[in-house]
Image 1 (tube, rainbow, N blue to C red):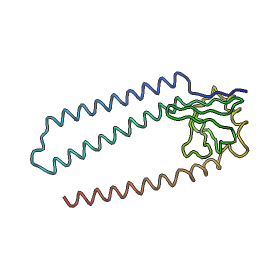
Image 2 (tube, rainbow, N blue to C red; image 1 turned 90 degrees about the vertical axis):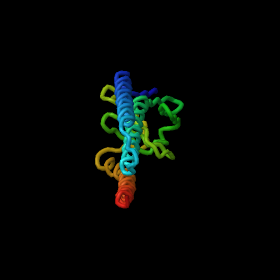
Image 3 (tube, helix red, strand yellow; image 1 turned 45 degrees about the vertical axis):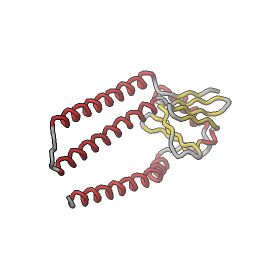
Length: 188
């Protein structure tokens, strides 16, 4: 018995084109700011120079985030699941895993994606499992160990338990950074 799941070629190329569009927009933004920066001279005004450095840093971080998210989406669209008599293989552009169905601790579907959590791995695997792959998805569900497939309130509770601490920690760290930045701006 062989099971294979992956995104359609149309989705893969569409995601790649959209991600290249994001990269081109970010490059255009940098070129525009570089041109503006070459026309504007803050001179001896310390506050203007600090504001210009802060703007450049914010735009750099924003671009890194946008291009990073675009690359992750491209990588997710290229994740494949292949299962046969030798076990289950998950392939991704920068990581691979091979094991048995018993190593999959949790699995569920979310907005057309099959989400898999593997024992001793903290990152999840996302494999595109559209409506045209319902038979393969049913075979995956049948191969999973008892209790691994999550749906309904059990899935929502699991997601809250695993993602809420990360969101709260990031919010707390962001709040502390904002307080530090406000205090630093107040002393200028």
